[in-house]
Image 1 (cartoon, helix red, strand yellow):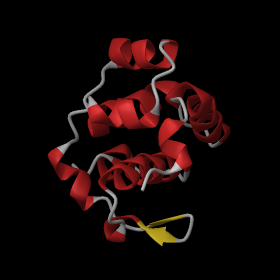
Image 2 (cartoon, rainbow, N blue to C red):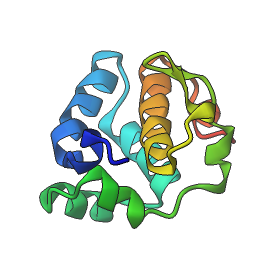
Image 3 (cartoon, rainbow, N blue to C red):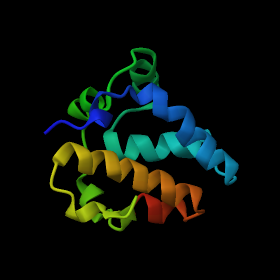
Length: 114
């Protein structure tokens, strides 16, 4: 089963992530640190994906998911991320959860599961 969200370009959601964290006093640099921690994409690679309008499906297909990503738990949109069975949807929700934690003012070392 392919969800519609998988075909959405990361670039169309990214500005909302930026707005969400900046509205709560966090920086775009911190957002990039979180994205790099989860996916392995540095600033340049992220910029390439945004410019290329890469879909979430392709974005996560090329990512090197952090081995500690499985430590991300809790709910996003009322769904527990650790219980999501679709691997791609789970990765997407991991990203949402990290952005939420960052926006909620959680300490960076906790967000990055250090």
